[in-house]
Image 1 (cartoon, helix red, strand yellow):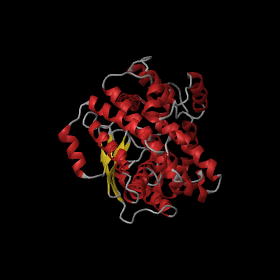
Image 2 (image 1 turned 45 degrees about the horizontal axis):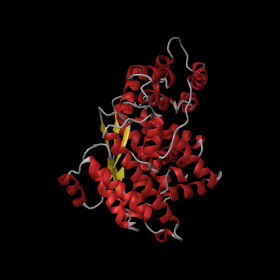
Image 3 (image 1 turned 90 degrees about the vertical axis):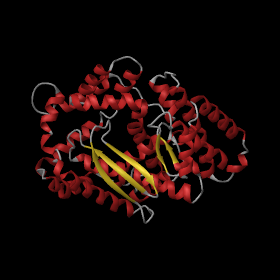
Image 4 (image 1 turned 45 degrees about the vertical axis):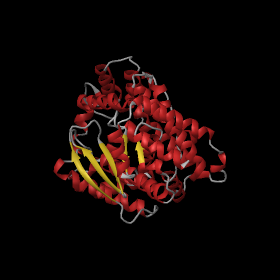
Length: 405
């Protein structure tokens, strides 16, 4: 499988020449990247290569994986990743897929479908919590203004959140001693935060400041992008699979692939792993983050009660994406739908539509991924926080993918 794995990595780099978003991270031999840039394989050649690799993997001896559960998962990982690469090639050549067909082909999963009535029930609950008259999104924006982190205090608050999330992670997960990352504040991006993993256990985390950032986002971003989220996930894959085992398929991260559901799902669920109960997280935020941001702590309980209700709207973005990609609505209608059912101000809704247009069915990886990872971990750990950390660490260090959850 090592030969298949190396050639797969070359194909991912080759496809990255056609799709600038495709290669999310690469820390293999520098000459591989140079070769991809110089050779510039055609989409047809990449498609032929993926077909050849898939057939070779299917026809190879099962003896390679007998008795080694991790090696069996590796074989499945390669099969799914190669299949997803082939699907992405077809899309770049012009094939149009429906939302669910696309997510199945790229991410090995399909998100549940919810009608408007499902979200109407959630909106009714929120209506009673947000005072005033008029559209709910307007009232909500006005209501939560006091919880915006001032831009001049953003780094102080974010660094405090990172420090706490890192300490909680290191108490349970062994990381390479030289792991590190830096934080950058950027603008004009379709996303709120991004982890650019550079290899050698280092990440650059970018935080988009186009729109106001609220106090609850500090821990969310620190845990999701850093500890125990993307930074930890990528560091453990590099340490345990690339360096220790020589599995070069993990030296490259294809964004539009099943790996992303695990990456985003573990990053989102990692917030609950780091803070195993709501009271614990709120205590830290009230005592550390609210004062650091200069935000009045007396309304904290009220604020978080409303945020809990918003969690029930997590799948609203999926429905906007599904309808937009399936051609049932246009981008204007998608933004209006998000204003109503995700309770987003117009600027935030428009930014989310831009994200959907660029990343399409990728949106399922956040909510469905989180739910799948939560069920998988909790089935194995039960209510024991230590066992939860143990199972979470195993998942972060393995080639397990959606269909094997």
